[in-house]
Image (cartoon, rainbow over all chains, first blue to last red; front, side, top):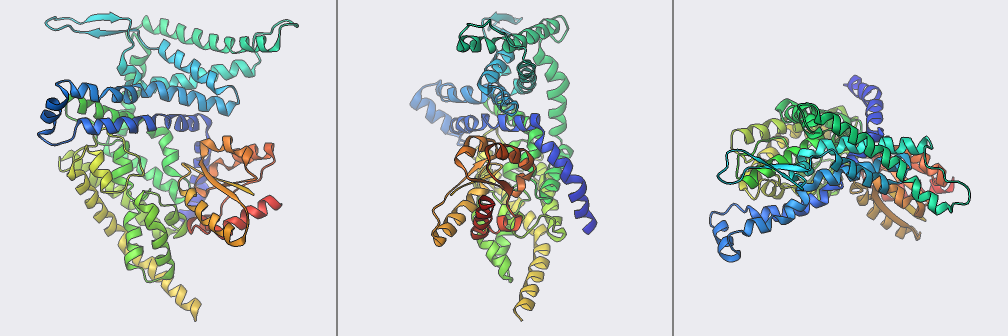
Length: 438
Length: 101
C-alpha cells in the first residue's frame, strides 16, 4: 500500500500537473464554464415546462393558451441552444488571456470563424410534401447548440492560435511615421482577424467539395459521435471516475482536470436528453454531467456524504468528531475538501480504498438503475453541482421521486463501503489520542 | 493586509476565509481576506498583498508564482492539513510570514 501512494506521488502527480496546467485544456475548461450560468437559468424554465403531473399540461393550456409550452421554452432556446456560440467565445477568450493578446478581439474573431464554418441554410419539409426543401437566410439552431459544441471548441482553439501567432510574430500592419498611434492601432486588430477568416473560409470551401459538405459533419462523424459513444458507456464512465479519484488521491482536483476532457462530452449528453425531453422522445444518454455530479459525487468527489454522516454520528475519536462537525455543512453542498485534506484521505492508504471504490460502485448501481428503468435518466435539467443530495436527484430527473430514491440507495451503498474503513480509522485515531493523553 | 485565496471554484477556500477572518479579528489585525476561482485570480491580484493557493490546484502554482513575481506578490500553496481542518489561525500566520519575507 505504501508502494501505491509512492506510485501516485511519483508517477501520477507530475503527469497530472502537466495535463492540468496545459493551456489549451485549461482554456477549454475555463471557457466552457461560461455556458453554465445560462444553462442553469434555462433549466428553471425547462423544469416548469415538464412538471410530471398528469393534469399539469391541460391546466397550463387552459390558463395560458394552447402554445404555452412554446412560449415558456423561449428562454431555453436562448440558453441551451446557443451553448456552442458561448463556449467558443469563452474558450477563445481564456486562451488569448494565456497568450496575453487582446481576449475580447480573439473571442469575437472566434465567433465569426465559427459562424463561417456553419451552413447558412436549413432543410425543411413542408406539410404534405415528400421532399425537404432548402431554406436560406437562417443559421440552423442545432449547430449553435450542443451539436456544434465540438466544432466551436476546435475553431476557438484554432483561430486563437492563428490570431496570437500573427501578433507574436509581429506580422501586423505597420503604418508610416506620422500616422497617429491610435489609428495604426486600429489596423493592428485587422490582419490577425483577416488571416483567421481567410483560413476558415478556405477550409469551408474545401469541405464543401467533399461528401461531408460541412465542417459540422466532419467533426460530428469523426469526433463528437465516437467520443460521445465511448464516454456514454459504463466502461467510459468507470474510467473517467477512476481517473478523478486517482487524481484526488494525490490531492489534486480530479474533477476539474478530467472535466477538461470529459466536460464537453457530458454536456453534449445532457443536452441530448434535454432535446429528447422537449421532443417527447426516449432519452438516449445515461451518463451525463448530472449523472456524475448529482448521483455519483454526493457530498463531493469520493461520494463522502456517507462518511461525513458516520463521523458526525458514530465517531469515538476527537479528531473524527471534530471533522464530522466541520465537514457536514459543506458536505450537504457537495464540497468535501475538509475531508480529503483534513482526515486526511489524500495519501492515506486506509481511506483511499473506500474513496476510490465507493464512486466506482455508485457508477455501476446508478447505471443499472437507469438502464433497467428503476430510476429515470437525467432529463437535461442542469442544476448546480452544489445542489444537496435527495433534492438534486429529484430535480435532475425532472421532479421524479425515483431520482431521489436512487440517491438514497447510492447513499446506502456508499455507507456500507465506507463503514468498515471508517471504524478502523476511527479506532486508530482513538488509540493515538488515548496514548497521547497518558 | 490583503490576503487573496484561490481554488478551483473558490468555494472550498471561502470556508477558510471565514475562519481566517475570525482569527484576524481575535488578533486585532485589520485584514481583507477573500477567495476567488482559479480563472479569476488575474483580475484580483493587483489588490492583494499575498496569494494563497488551495492544495488541490497546486498544479497552477508554477504559473501563478510567475505572475506573482512580475507583480512582486508572494504566492504559495496552503498546507493541506491546515487547509482540511480550516485552521484559520495557522493559515493567517503563514500569510503574514509570506508578506514579511
